[in-house]
Image (cartoon, rainbow, N blue to C red):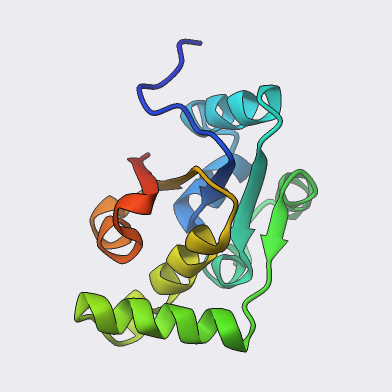
Length: 137
């Protein structure tokens, strides 16, 4: 596999689509995970992401295997307040952006440089700003 143009370094963050595709063993996401593993990078997701990904039809063993290979970062009071501040700074609010804001706060709290794999690059780029590389998958 050839390296994508924005090679991850430091921490690789999976949003709900990134995690869902990892569970499905999507070729693109699997490639990113292999690069992260080869470079000994942290691969993380937000605990809030699990709410979007877990549903009755998900392959539970594949989900558990995937989760065993990454770190699920907790959403505590401090991170929730940081997410709310990111929303306010971006002029956004409401449930439509809440989980994206928690993913963004998680990414901004991670050791850098940080890359986020997402199907929603516009909102995450606005929330994260220039400190995080946002890659559309």
